[in-house]
Image (cartoon, rainbow, N blue to C red; front, side, top):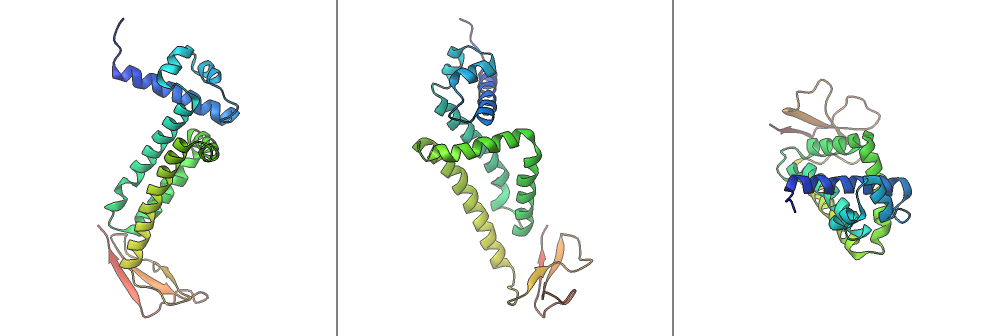
Length: 193
């Protein structure tokens, strides 16, 4: 029997996972069957079962892969110099992905995964890890941002002044609602590379 290389195996696994996501997004996790996934891929049932002995194994692999992609987006969070800029970048990247049809399909599957997590402890562990780590990273960024800035007085908001300097050196002012352009005595200058 001829040996196949790792790239071929990874490609086949990817094909099966993509087919599973399409089936789960279209038919729902519980209505989609392994036979549907087989039909979607055009492969034999034996080929599918070689990679994923059960539908739940496919779900677990899909969730783990997606969480790994999200973790990669967050990987720079602990070394960023400006927590505010990083949080804005994370929001932009996360929300920007929602325009991608593949991401929309994945989000339909995500909702089903949350429901499945209530009955399957393995899926629950994957879902929790996909939520806990990003939550911890974002919470740490928020704490760091709070520590690195001076607090505004009650009723004030922190804003960049009109015509402010480029992002590398920015003054932040506290302004009171209803008084455009006014600033309190407390200003905070933060520099970022």
